[in-house]
Length: 136
Image (cartoon, rainbow, N blue to C red; front, side, top):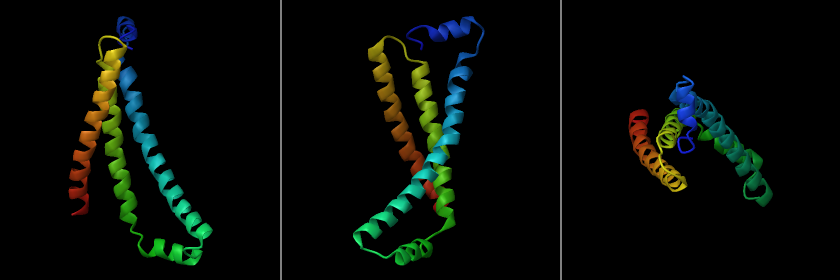
C-alpha cells in the first residue's frame, strides 16, 4: 500500500494508518490461530482413528484407550499458549515489513521474504524459550 501511495492517502485524511492497517491483522491472528490449532488437533486424532480403522492395524477400543492413557490436559494449554505467541510474531513482523516497504514490486517481494525469515527465526527462538519456561 505504501508503494501505491495508499498509506500516504490515509495519513492525509487524518487516519492513523498504522493502527488502522496493522491492529486488525494482529487481533484477527490472535483469535483465529488458536481455533485453527484446535481444529487441527481434532482432525489429526480423527484421521489417526480413521487410518487405524481402515487398515485394521488397531481396534477402535485400543485407539481410544491409547489416547486417554497418554492424555495430559496441559498439552492443550501449552499448545494454545505457544500459538498465541507465534500468532503475534507472525502478524506483527509481516505487518511491519509490509507497512514500511518502499520501492516497487521487487522490494515488496524482498520485504515478504525478509518477513518470513525473521518470523521463522523468532518462532524458533520463542519455541525454545517457551518450552523451557512452561515444561521445566
